[in-house]
Image 1 (cartoon, helix red, strand yellow):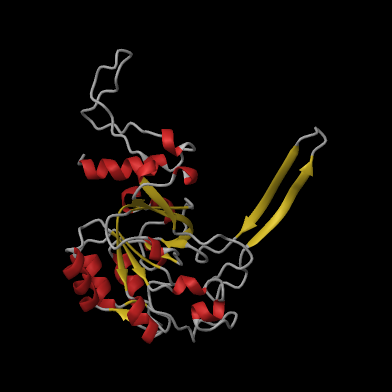
Image 2 (cartoon, helix red, strand yellow; image 1 turned 30 degrees about the horizontal axis):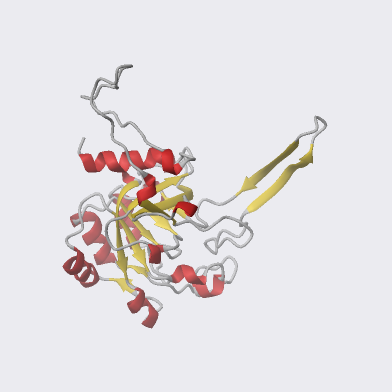
Length: 294
């Protein structure tokens, strides 16, 4: 297994570590042997998270969460218990209900491609890897329905190099600054009606370039859809889903992630048979973290 892949795999394991400063992990390849009591054997791969800034790419779920207009139920959190028990200890528990496609979430290929994999079956290797952030904030500022073009992708590559296969493409529009104002974010806040939406996203030809020629693992964006607001045929979803490429929608904080060099870990709720689901996505950005923030 290449060292680069080991780094990404190690990163995903380390997310659950509580003490970042002391955290390390052993990643075993077929030829590795764990060290015995004497310390014999090849060393494992260690990743020191104190050398990364961890950027949360996820909007919190709650009463203000924005859903696709046709999902009118929204997010429900019902209190089941809260307070001191008969045994003298504190206890709280809740029941929650949510549509798959609201807030920061993933679209599985089955969402727009018959026979595509469901949310529980997306290969994990698609969900962690090198981030490529394509910035169209300037274009979107002047055109609310702007769509990423092949020329935009080529301009990005002229500055940062060709996009490597297996990259998680994140489209930055800075629309996330409008969250949770549904009218400003979606362009229309009429309940149950998705016919008058306005926001930027990917264009069809740019999506084909990224998916079919660059081998993107994921298409993500800090807007409500990987298709632009006025879309009625959702062609970008169809292109991505047909290639087995999931999409990440309603991301945030992409302004804190560099164009290249970060690692993204995007792990959704593992819903068997689901066409998508709530997502917790983070970016590991190289750079030392102040000791007080570890």
